[in-house]
Image 1 (cartoon, rainbow, N blue to C red):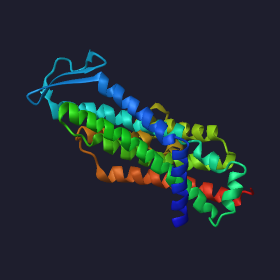
Image 2: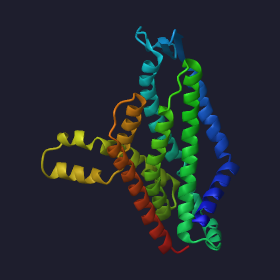
Image 3: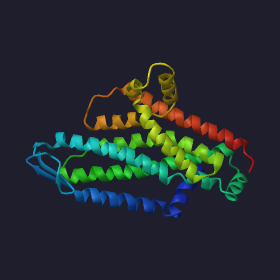
Image 4: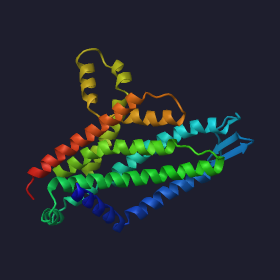
Length: 279
């Protein structure tokens, strides 16, 4: 395990040397500056009198308590952070697996006193750390904006960032396995994007099954979506937490566990293929 953590640390240092952190910081900071400049909150005696986004009044002239009004803003932000952070992680981290397996580099790594599964596990853990850092940075920035502007410090962006990172863990296991099989960043990203959209469908499988005729078609749909990560279910959970809606803890725990099992199973397949490959 120590060797895997060393590989993860090397990946973080490589990301730093490639200016990945700088590009990430600039991109997220620019997005936060745009959001902070476009969002105008008028707070009068503890009530939110007006909310303008890009100059448009989105409060519909209603005056509400700040903490109540911002719950619904927090819901929208939770969706934005969850899906935006997840999509950004899929696209930006797709190259780390193929770069590990690049000709010349992989032979050098295999000559070191590190076992093959530790190389893959370390890469997996390092990429998850990158994803967590990026989403938490964006979430902390949004929390700071609302705390300074409205005096309300919301935990919902942080929760959305953490749930997005858990979801990314499930998806990235499959992305890394695809990279081991083909050594292609494009294919790795394509697998991640496909699971992103299929996971949205899988999260609403109970609602969508009524669109299929009872029988083979419905059974095939339910079977196909049974093993997929429930991306939209966790997005809805983060949004419900933002508005202080009641959620079933056991259901949320089972969804998180399902995502982790999916990711670890995909990673185990990747390790098996990696062990059998001849470099």
